[in-house]
Length: 278
Image (tube, rainbow, N blue to C red; front, top):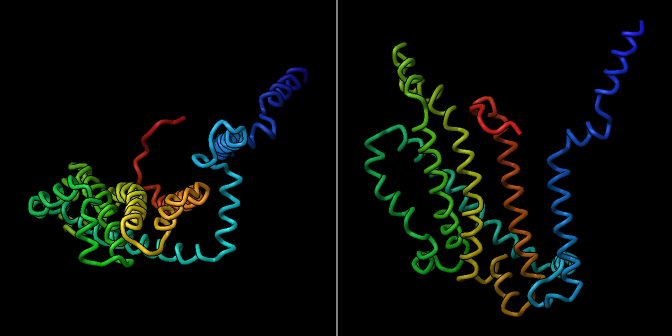
């Protein structure tokens, strides 16, 4: 009887408290959110202290106020529509071209030999240096910025997909061929599942490259868009508006990556179980 009570007491002491369980279940958002709030608080205090001229460094509160004013004015909706269209067009076109072409060059050796030099050359050339010729070809409308976003995003997707095909283990292919599996069956049951994690990696990396293409394209030649708004605000020393425009691009990037992460979890069983445990 006494030993049972001792064991029961030991279990009670070993059981974590509700607060400890809550922290364990929400450790990532707690640490990340706490760090973000700390940075914002320090930023606000530094801005209010007068150590830095507000002309060079706005504050979180001033940036939020500038954002509210922009939405109340209503002009920002045009900029959002233009930049959003350019990003969606360029990124969607990059995915539509990069994924099939990466699969094809990884699966067909001779096609890789044929297109490899062109892919390597385009990868070595800074895409933004092509902006003048792109403007000459497509004008200063939406399509010129969409093409820049496409050029920035397509290569990460293509290269990641190509690498994914090449990393499939040869022994799996040999076993499948020993059982007289067709090439289509091998591709659909071995190559594609093994490549999906690499495809998502390329898609996530390409988001930042596409957004960069939109921003630089609008800074170079545009009459509307968030990049144009940021450039105009910078010319007139509206630091809070500049930061708010940067914040919007950051939010779009984070949300897009979050959507891809959620979609990727549907294919979690296809991802190899590797990586650090902590």
